[in-house]
Length: 240
Image (cartoon, rainbow, N blue to C red):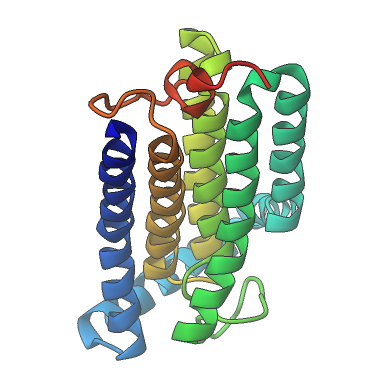
């Protein structure tokens, strides 16, 4: 009789996390859709300055174009899905954790596409474009997917890593997200507000989903489990 109450509190907490991240994304979406002048002008100035730097440095342009290709969401999602599969095969006790990660990955990929269609912001227009990209601009799909993947992978792999490996993982994933954000702006295919929204969207979705995953089958109604397998839903079920 106690478990439903604990589950309800934890799921309510997940909703709270979702709203915490959804509010700034919604505000940014409203601002760019309504063309709030101070933000639009700042975006324009920054995108012009960034693309000028890229054009003046051919090595930078080449590096950014390579990064753009290797971080295409389809490739990174294939790698992330493979990680889920390998972890499931090697750690069957984390089966539900792997399932959570895979489902959240697929939701994040599709939800950012839906958000693009809702906002319908045009891509940046510069006089001498560095690169081109199809579709709408807000949020940045590359960055939204990168932030979601980084958050989900960190939470997924946390229980099987040593403390040192955890620090390396978090550092590497953070660098991946930030480099992707810089890449999109300096190639002139996204405004800074697009990449900011992408980071908030991806990290927020991954975090809120994980809190909901823990809340669905809490270890104890009064505990607040850390991101470790021993405190997640698997702990109350044993090995599968």
